[in-house]
Length: 227
Image 1 (cartoon, rainbow, N blue to C red):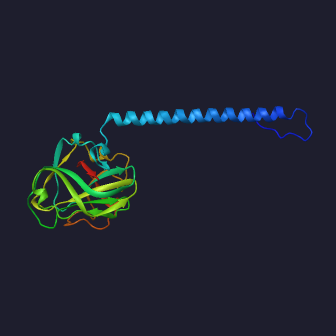
Image 2 (cartoon, rainbow, N blue to C red; image 1 turned 45 degrees about the horizontal axis):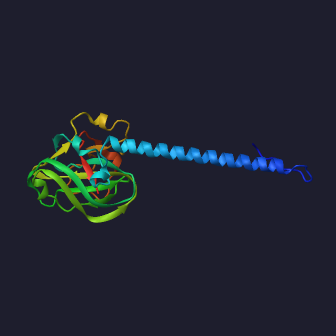
Image 3 (cartoon, helix red, strand yellow; image 1 turned 90 degrees about the horizontal axis):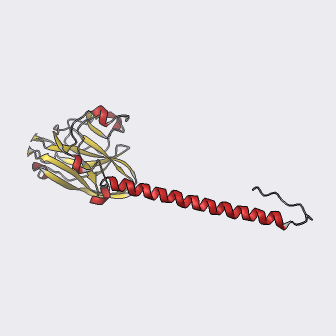
């Protein structure tokens, strides 16, 4: 019902006024019920989604590439080449640690030339670890603290690693497919996984800033997480 102003002196003026108020109350009640129904549906959908797979926060992480259960293969890194893996943070967080899985440690790692870090979408290094030469000499789960924890907003972030050694470590990843499949529909700047590219090879440390669009599309889909 649409309310129509009542002219002065109209007889039984209370009838249309009351009808308008009743109509307004009805619409408020209906919209409130509809909103509650939609909220209930969203809550149910979130519950179903959460029940399908383990979520990063259920294992103490802010974000990860995927459930580590899927990291059932390995690849060797390439000396001096930056490898990246994208993670999606869905809320603000403090970056404290970077986590990866090594399938085998390296040998004779070059001191001061083995690092993990995190870049943002703009290609700025927002966190980097101390040298990991000693840690990366053995296989296993590696939790690596960044040297300067920082507060970050929700968004896409990129875990980066670079290693130099006589024999570089191998890293746990998903079973092989192709870079084209893993990064389907994404530009070089957006690629979920990358290895090398212009400015990403022949390095002994992680640069303070990089051009994300210069990355090389990679099929080394290694597991990584941040917390």
